[in-house]
Image (cartoon, rainbow, N blue to C red; front, side, top):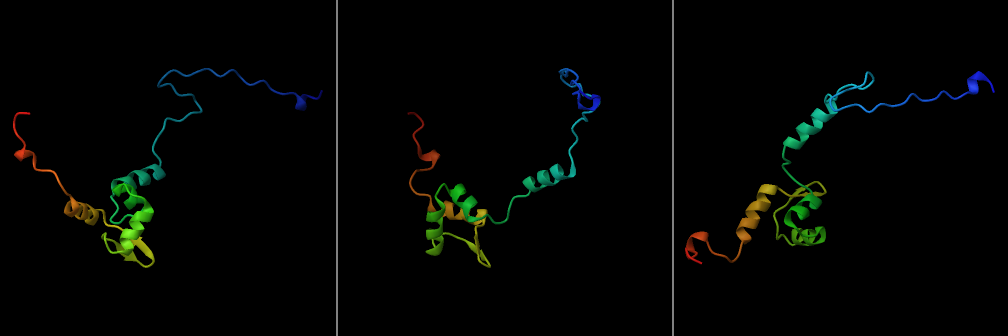
Length: 110
C-alpha cells in the first residue's frame, strides 16, 4: 500500500471540563444576526395575521375568517391582507365579557 493511501488515525478526543475551551473552540460571542433577532423579539407587532389572531383568541382560522367577513370582529385590510390589531381585539373581548360578578360582591365567609 502506498503511503498516500494509508489512513491517519484520529487523535483521541479528550472531554473538556466545564468552562474550559480548546484552542480551536472560540468562546461564544453573540453575532450580528443574534442581536437583530433579539431586537425583533422585543418590538411588539402593531398588527397580527389571521394565524396569530386565531391562536390568540383560541379559535380556528376558519371561524375567524367567517367572523371577519360578517363584520363581527375588528380587522384592518392592507391591500389583500386581512390583519388584526391586538389592542382592538382586547377591547372587543372586554365588550363581550358575560356573566360573573365583581369579587367585591362575594360573601366574605364561604
